[in-house]
Structures are given as C-alpha cells and as structure tokens.
Length: 94
Image (tube, rainbow, N blue to C red; front, side, top):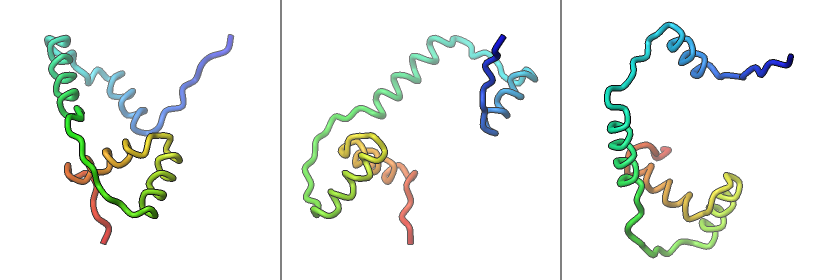
C-alpha cells in the first residue's frame, strides 16, 4: 500500500509536535468566535473607496510586470502594497 507522506516545513512540524503533546485547547463557543473573526476580517478587507492617481508609465509597467509574475491583478498589488505600508507591515528601505 502506498502511503501519502506530507512534506512539512519547520513551523508546520512544530505545530504538529505541539498538537501531539496536547498543547492545544478547544475554543469555547467556537462558532460564535469564528463568526466574530470573519466579520472583523470582512470589515478590515472591505474596499469601499475609489481613488484616481497619476503614476509614471515606467512605474506602472514595472508594477504590472511584478503583478503578472505573482499571478495577481496589478490593482490588487497596488492596494495590497498600500495596505501594508499604512499598517506598518511594509518598511521603506534606506
């Protein structure tokens, strides 16, 4: 019989070890907690404003190439980059 062996990275292996040692606890009222988290995520990621900006052709072409390389629309890349910048997850390189 052929077994399906998972290839786990170090973080996944640590999670598996912790689980096997019983270090995880069930969440009380799981469905309610899940609903709250889903609602928070929905509100956080909701795109409810439209803007227009002027950008150089060269920069736009570079953004479009990078987005294509990542397999996402270039508008999504721009929006994601702006979100990371304002949330402190994207740092300027000096």
